[in-house]
Length: 240
Image 1 (cartoon, one colour):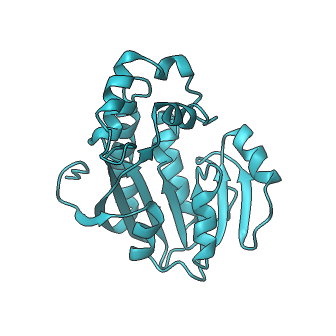
Image 2: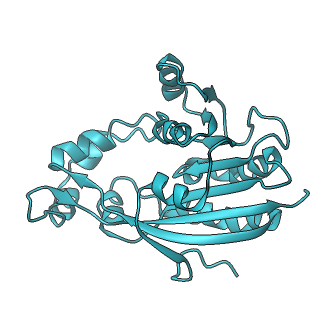
């Protein structure tokens, strides 16, 4: 039985998303896709590690910004949903979902994971899914205005039910991050500036959120929160 939220994961300690991935996967020379790439920060980091990256973003506002961005060798931005990837079957070495699987509409999560398996090379192909956990102070401060409990549970269920049967091997890891904000206003600006979430300021600027945020005050005067992360690495694709 898959138990994604328990302690039966290998602990990587404190890591950024890209550091956790680079510790586990040598991507230099590989052709990969970054699904739900947002503004492409991690896509660019993958390129810096030597990968050729197809950066896929479904949000039309962000996708337009990506098309207007300065070109980077090895990086191709496309606008598409995770359930219909613009890549040939068996053409990619790896597919990444960096904090994006839970943003796929629940009815499309199974199709998105099936698509990821479809585009992977049958020899050596891998699927790497990084998702935020549902413990830690960062989750608690976000929950009153942006409760992702349901979709994060759905994402883990889809991995168990759809991804796992399509691969011969899965390795599970956990790591932790400590998001920092200078003050409450900085946090509000950050969370309301994402077009794919569309969070209004009035939902964030409440007494409840302020009180939870204040609990994160550090000795240095800024605000620090704990965010556990989950990483599932699937290898050895099986024939559909």
